[in-house]
Amino acid sequence: MVSVMAGEPIISPDTRRQPRLPPGHTPTPILLEPTLGEIPPFDPAHWDLTIFPRPFVSEVKSFTWSQFLSLPRVRVFADMHSIDRQSKLDNLWEGVSTRVIQDQIQLSPEVRFVMVHAEYGYSANMRIEDFFAEDSLLALRLDGRELTPEQGYPVRLVIPRLYSWKSVKWVRGIEFLTEDRPGFWESVPGSQYPFHGDPWTESRFREK
Image (tube, rainbow, N blue to C red):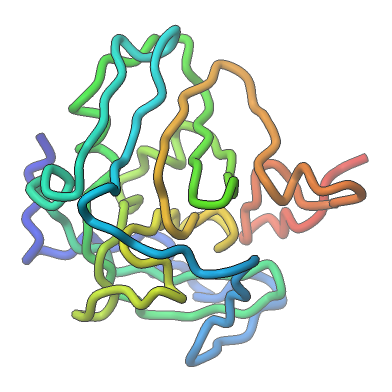
């Protein structure tokens, strides 16, 4: 299991960069993240988080709300960067490390990518090394307060080293893949969203 306690924040390595901001970015006190469609309702009696089944995971794994809340927690001090070149610095997230999820399953060695699924069919793809990075977590709280519905309550994925559209709100499922596949924004007709989304290399548009 992850040994870091919630009281000992993990410091995201990107917060130690000099300069602190990715190229062309400006700091903002509030990172505006428009919600696509309605905010989904939350019913703890029917909420679950499902790890998709075989062939790349040994068995189906599903957490009820109470089971998810019982998992060990970490705190992560990290920045968040949006594709419109706004950056919200100094965020303190609290939740379940993605590495705790890794401890709960047996993954095929062929797995290279992850698709994270959310309410209303939203999804985001990412490399497995980004998903299981030390500073990646399934967040429940931000800056000492429970997430708001607009921030992704009850559970939001946070991947600090990628653009914020990869930090999926209202997470409900995790799928492991051997080949990359477009998520929601990458699948929109005419979309130029890149598959990776690294703010430090300005991965803002897909290469033709």
